[in-house]
Every structure is written in C-alpha cells, then in structure tokens.
Length: 83
Image (cartoon, rainbow, N blue to C red; front, side, top):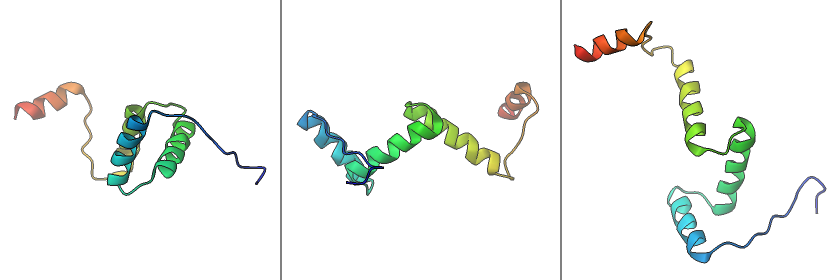
C-alpha cells in the first residue's frame, strides 16, 4: 500500500447506498469517484454545503463571462424588469 493513500471503509444502510448509486450512475459516475470528487470540493471550497459549492462555481463562471450584463444598482435591475 502506498504511504500517501488511505483505505476507507464504512457501514451504510443498503437502501441509502442503492438510492445514491442509482442517482450517481445515471450521471455516468460511480460511487467511489463521486465521493472522492465531493471530498475534493469540500477541501477546495472549505465548505461541505453542495448548494454553496454550486453558487461559488456559478459566480466564478459569471466573472469569466465578458458578455454578461452589469448593473450599477439594484434599482437598475428592477427598472429593467418593469420594461
């Protein structure tokens, strides 16, 4: 065994595991890979909240978008909605 790796083992309710596996496999992933990616996201964003991670990723994508519309105030946004 490599000194830089660790083997994880835990007990999980079979119905929970099967439901999780079903969702993950529909997205073309496997359970182990999905859990590893989740752990890497927790480390990267220092937060375990999936909604927060998605929000951060959305903001990062918006910052890179040079074609996005920029508003100088909230009232400007509301004015556009009224049009």
